[in-house]
Amino acid sequence: MSLFLYNTLTGKKEEFKPTTQGVALMYNCGPTVYNYAHIGNLRAYVFADVLRRTLEHNGYKVKQVMNITDVGQLTSDGDEGDDKMVKALKRLGKPMTLPAMREVADIYTEAFKKDLQALNILTPHEMPRASDHIKEDIELIKTLEEKGFAYRISDGLYFDTSKFPAYGKLGNINLTGQQAGARVEVKSEKKNPKDFTLWKLSSNELGWESPWGIGFPGWHIECSAMSRKYLGQPFDIHTGGIDHIPVHHNNEIAQSESAYGVPLANFWMHNEFVNMGETKMAKSGDNFITLQTLTDNGISPLAYRFFLLEASYRTPLRFSEELVRQVQDRKLYTLYKTLSEFPLGGVINDAYHSQFLEALGDDLNTAKALSLVYAILGDIEHLSPEDKRATILDFDKVFGLDMENQAKLLKSQTESIPPEIQALAIEREEARKEKNFKLSDEIRAQVEKEGYEVMDTDSGPLIRKKI
Image 1 (tube, rainbow, N blue to C red):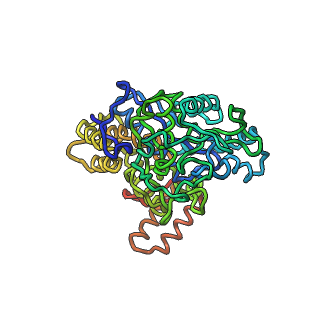
Image 2 (image 1 turned 90 degrees about the horizontal axis):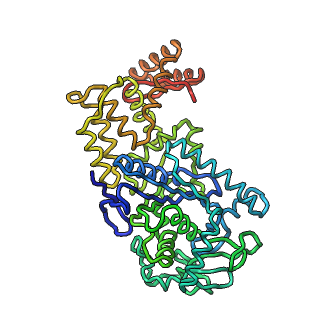
């Protein structure tokens, strides 16, 4: 089945054709580990995971690389402000040393990996850390300098974008008449407003030795160096959030293509934001929700994953706990409960599987693919319960909702519910049918006091022990 993906580089859907037959090489811009990831950040990694699973479902052998940025990203796209890791040291009252920076990075890297695990995201094959690749950064910068693409000013070495006429081609960024202070601030010594740091000199002797002095690699050079080391150049797919398009990813393209004379990646794919109200979720603001916050509020990380899958990765999403809770109680747990009641031993239905591949082949249309699950559940003419279970579980190899394990867990939890709690649930359901919501709420509170929770799913009330 053909796989068509939206390529930001060309602005259209294109059939995926890898550089090596049967192999897909993918680089995902990973987190800057100066704080906990928020659920908006995590959309990028759910998207990348679905992409990987789809490629594998289509028979490709995937090599997935996701970097960990633990040095080099400044607080401004205009090469101003502190390194974000330095910002973390200040926030946590740590000494300004490289070992302290590593210690902080270790804390947030482990937290990020736990988030990936909670969201059932497959572990990337490589997760290189920027601070372990200073040598590769310096080698790449030397190449750019030797080829005349770099120049030095008082605070470091910069890339001369005037030497790369195609700058801004990703996303068709209009650079004509770019004004100072618009997105990238002008530093008086820079030749052009859009020129960017290759090596930033340290103002406090914190950093690494280099031919240009003690300092840090630029954020952009790190991704170029690491992606080339682990995947070669060009590789097949580069992903990230849409906020990376104007600066970070155009900078990667400019320096990598200037250094080596070939494309960095053939496909560039970008996910949209998760918004709180009218603005995107951001660590710098007050609208910062972590996965742990959802868990503490009784929302499963897999419910958030389901919520993301119900929309195209290229569609902005407005987040609310109420919406995700509805997904959990009325869709996700209903699905788990239904599957737990279906027997094993079925076969995957070819007709539905073909439709599934067709939906995913249309730029990862997970919303359409999920709709097939409900079509299967409602199909009483063509599928046995066994075949329904087998087909849906096969789809879940891409959805990543852990349906088989969660269905088994839910069944075991349900079977172990004490009779008195089951009786309360029946009494509560009767109260709801009679629209006696006051009594219904009182019974729910009593059930929760006993250490259980009751959820109203499409297939009836569901009781389980609190996690």
